[in-house]
Amino acid sequence: MDFQLSEDQRAIQDAARDFAEAELAPNSARWDEEKHFPVDVMRKAAELGFAGIYVQEDVGGSGLGRLDSAIIFEELSRGDVAVAAFISIHNMASWMIDRFGSDELRGRYLPRLTTMELIASYCLTEPGSGSDAAGLRTRAERDGDHYVLNGSKAFISGAGTSDIYVVMARTGVEGPKGISTFVVENGTPGLSFGAQERKMGWNAQPTALVNFDNCRVPAENLVNKEGEGFRIAMSGLDGGRLNIGACSLGGAQFALEQAKAYMESRTQFGKPLKDFQGLQFKLADMATELEAARLMVRSGADALDKRDPRATQLCAMAKRVATDTGFEVANEALQIHGGYGYLADYGIEKIVRDLRVHQILEGTNEIMRVITAREMFRQ
Image (cartoon, rainbow, N blue to C red; front, side, top):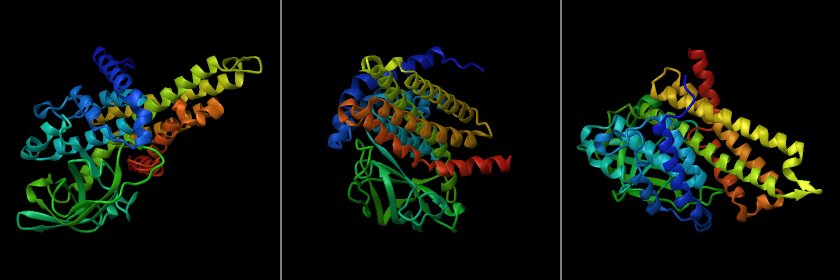
């Protein structure tokens, strides 16, 4: 068991950090304020291989592992949490096509997804089914050489801008065994989008309803076969949970470093804040808990790479701990800054706003506890 990054992993880490510092961090506040989706900058990230991190190399992917992915997303999130999180979603949707799609489907879409010429979104959640994902109502009825989709998806990152939507819809019986996965192209007749949601954070990426009204999708855009959609969706989420956990680590790590620097420069009651033991203890706890969460994320990534039977449980554990810890660390960093932390100028309040949703998406942290307990009893 080696806890040190390899030479290649350190090079990947450096490349991601350099990109975040040069391309993301200088623009982060403006993107948040203007609600700007920086597609051009994300395509620059794709040039470094960050749009198909664990997609196979024969279709333009980087062919890396989940541990490499966790390292990349932690570093990218130091520059901008919302943008890094969207690149994570794009990777998850692309991997689902790569892992479960036909060779024809892979060849048709992935070479352009790995460059982000095409942008992908993941469509599982619905207005009436969030945590109860297997209760989804969007239907896909076979009609000759097409499927006709009807229904809606909610809280979809990239909605309206993305070119490709990986959609879970019901083709059969109620429950998970009746769900299938489809690739739907933007511009398909019957596909439309709701108004952009007004959100607490993640303002640098669009979020809206995705609507299907007799939307005809070619039968060859079925991923794998009918009835496999729920398994495909959950497989994607194992890695997605690690990625969003890593995004929490990166944002929180940046906030921690800013808090440390503030304690070194700010003076109260005649001495620097860093000399107050109460604040020293707070900072020490923040660093310790963040390091523990990082180890859990990397352990889950290692298990997923090795197809360990406990991978789903470890990914759920890691997601819960990393996103809870990330938010708490960022919030404590804001508290250390006092009133200044509440101002947009210091960048901490944006991290707090962006990280809060990580405790909800990719499965709420309450559902992560359900998964953990279920796997315990199953074992």
